[in-house]
Length: 108
Length: 123
Image (cartoon, rainbow over all chains, first blue to last red; front, side):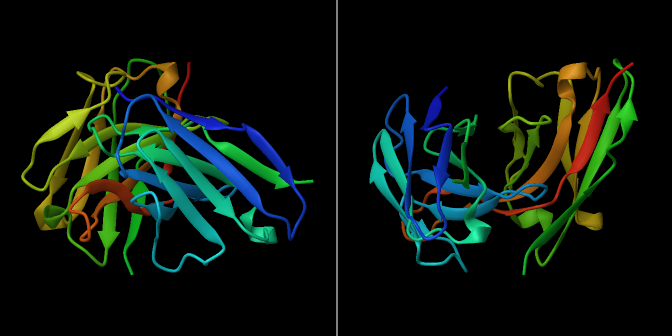
């Protein structure tokens, strides 16, 4: 099973600032990596798939990069609705699908 | 727009059984790979089970032998039968559609999620 880790666990950011979230896989997942956003009380929402492709309707301030074992989600100029928990998920070797533990982005 | 709605969650005692349902709109269950994911209170996302378009099924080790995923094409519904429930099964259970990336041929990311249904296992 591929183990996913994320850092940091919590990121405090001021509105308008940028944020960089990291995700690491225990073995290569090539480019088969997705990012999800989960706001409180809501279902997860797909942001990025294929490590760098934005899902339909996702603003351009969200960008993904990386391949193999190291991935990054960058949010430029955080808006109020961006304060949420972000999860990465590998889909290179499945089942099982595996998620990272999440990074909470909160208001500084 | 693809939407999913789950139902069937409730409080239940350890050892009991429960069947969750998921009804999509905007697509049919028989054409798609579909999955169940759960989230314990205050915790992260945990994959539970998947059903392929052809009917093959797979489970997380934590639920293998206790949970069964299925679908009824005539009712356009996805199900999760949960037996021998334990306190650690307490979670919000969400169904999701597994998407396909036409540019790479890869599949396995979840592009539509239901809001989930809460299962509480407690005495």
